[in-house]
Amino acid sequence: MNFYNNFAIYYDKIFPRNPKVIQYMDRVFKQGHILDIACGTGEYSVSLAHLNYQVTGLDISEQMIHYALTKATKENVKVNFRVQNMLDIEDQSLYEGIICIGNSLVHLDSESEIKSALDRMYQALKPHGSVIIQVINYDLIFEKKLPGLSTVTNQEISFYRNYEFDGSKIHFKTRLTDGLRVFVDETLLFPLKHSALMAMLSQAGFKDIKTVGGFSHESFDLKQDITYVVTAKK
Image (cartoon, rainbow, N blue to C red; front, top):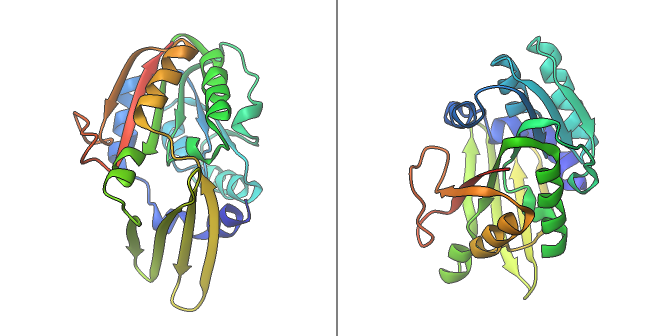
């Protein structure tokens, strides 16, 4: 948690708003009330609000929510932001759409927690509502024994992302430098396989489950795409 509180001030420079992501979401949802789970600094909550969606954004990091509220005010849009763990969602049939992107789902502790979160997402959707989930392709990480993700560089900032597998969890070790300071941190990730996610979505009741290799892709290659995006309907 300290990692994301410390990281909040740099987040938008490392991961700037991507028009392709916004276009993808707009094609899937079209209209309605959207829940942004693990919304971070609110980039996509605010983006959807600009498109006249009603948006609720949740994040477990108080610092992320602080920046998200500031951003919404600055950009003159209304978003209902709140500090909340995705495992504590109790909304029933409230949303036309839910997004959980940025590899957020695998920050949960176990398959049982992930299944619980998916069950809560299903219950929170209105009939025929859609969910969009984006995660890292851990099948590929393990098959190719990749030591981490590519370094992100943006202006004066560099963000290094390394993986160490201990047999059950991935230790996500990060180093961020802005040219003057260096921040080193670590967080645990659950290495969720694609087939396990598909099974859990089906068990939760989701239908019409589809996977693409990214927000700008039309297909998914388990042996090539480092990330993937899943859409499913209630």
